[in-house]
Length: 116
Image (tube, rainbow, N blue to C red; front, side, top):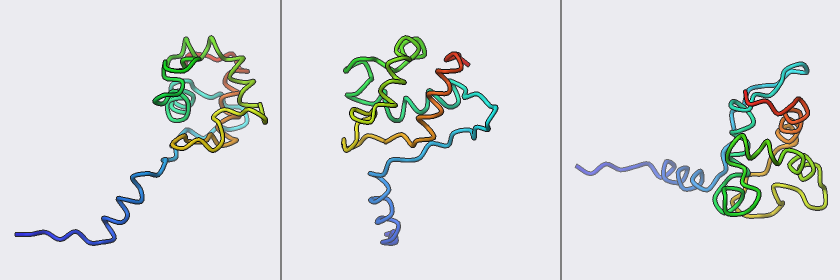
């Protein structure tokens, strides 16, 4: 028996295959502190420590807490750099960080960059 897959199902699969997914991160309130494991690491894994970027191929390596902590001052500088931002604008296959995600990383660093 031959099963037919509706055309819209195939179309949706092909369209969604190349899309960058949004992260489902915990909501921060004014007094809350970002958690490294729940909020910060997923951001780095989705936008920074990806293949051929900061995954050990290109410095700095941003795959672990220790390496992110060691580079925290440079990270803040690059996140705030309008002329030379990170992630770079216009590079294919790189998920851009939203302003709120950049603020979350900066807040985490300013609060002591805890491994929590």
